[in-house]
Length: 402
Ligand SMILES: Cc1ncc(COP(=O)(O)O)c(C=O)c1O
Image (cartoon, rainbow, N blue to C red; front, top):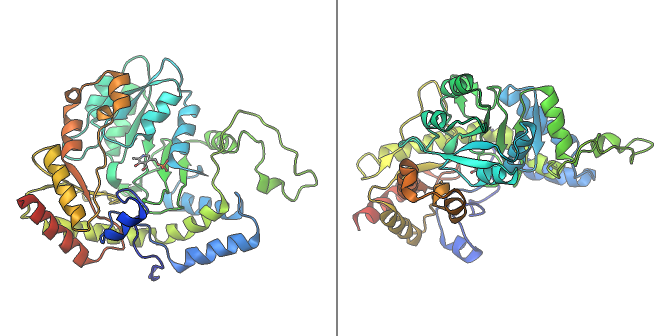
């Protein structure tokens, strides 16, 4: 798909601030890319007069099932909503523990807390920031009810090791694939490994419905329950009822949530999905340009994914040696040069709530601390030119020298 994007890169996403600041950033950290097809589809959805969940959500659902090679997938209002449904399905509740990698967005841990359970933070691989599965094994107790694994930055986890973890410990895994739509492990799509897997279509992600997500379920029953709970526990969706003689005839069969996706979001998603592979290839090309250009710069680039795997390259992060203060100084210099950066992520145990509620000191998870102190995410989205990458690398070289 070679459609000309209709959007100029703008800072609608992480790393950009208020409008004034956004205008001063010339190379955005990330930016959604929309084509004319998305605009046409949104207009059509509005003109058709059915904007809540209906035929376009059904089309996106079918498209995602076929793209991922899965049978049971439910479109939802966010990745967090999908992960909540997965925790409910596993019956996670008070007294349970759920393993969560320390370096990730707060969503997984927050959801565990809202189930009345305890998130147990696991240290990470020093090079990739992915969960250390040996550490996860050591953290399993008789209370461990589930483990989140996160395909951080779009890098696929070693799914052979994930399967071995579950086989050895009996602990079910929930995959947080917020960053990883289109990532593959040994030729298989992330999402197709039989674990509940949630994707994010937030505005910053590789494909977007502005906000939205999808949950892959391991069985038809689990998917049916996820669908039911996503629409407040109503026995039938409103689209199925609207031509009935008795459209008000539904039954609440479980206490559900308002987690369903709507058709205007799906209108975007249908065309974002069609463009996804081409845009991911551009991301991977940009990452190779960064890797080459950074070869003589004093930063650590992330190790490549194995040849048999495909990184979705949602985030391109480097490590700035010297710790948090130096990394922050470099980020400020880049910001002054009009370049957006961010940190994906500051370890959860360094945030006030988790430090206090779990009683953790910074050095209790030393690799997560080092990773989050040194990590700096550089601009990465398909709207970047080769020249933008050169400009970022030159600015980074200057900032490190200063
Ligand atoms: C790793 C990770 N997991 C989960 C989420 C939550 O996604 P959503 O905003 O779609 O709920 C995010 C959002 O940025 C994320 O980065």
